[in-house]
Amino acid sequence: MKMIFIYYPSCSTCKKALKTLKEHDAIVEIRHIVEDTPTAEELKAWIMQSGEPFTKFFNTHGVLYKEMGLKERVKNMNIEEAVALLAGNGMLIKRPLLITEDKVLVGFKEDDYKQLLK
Image 1 (tube, rainbow, N blue to C red):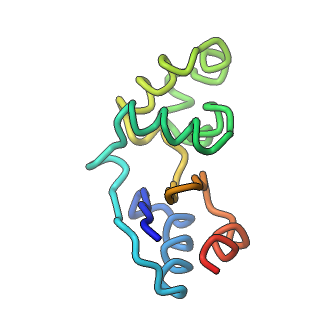
Image 2: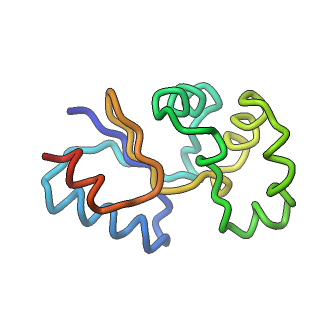
């Protein structure tokens, strides 16, 4: 199964997710969320594939999100505006992201990873 893991190396949650992937000998393409930020096209496809609202893809606890006052602004955006903003700065994207051919996991929940890796 082809998987893409998008993370920020100093993020403790990302480290836990990566550890889980390694424990299951998962073969993943690893991408740094800032150095290789997902494109608007990728993000839109992943949002649609996930079945989640685009708001779930924002790192609402991040400094940049708060500095930009996005809490209220995001509510009034359409998907094109949201993916353009997310693609413009990887630090706005909730992490980690784990993408497979038929599933997108946003954030890290160990049980979800283990279920996917069975």
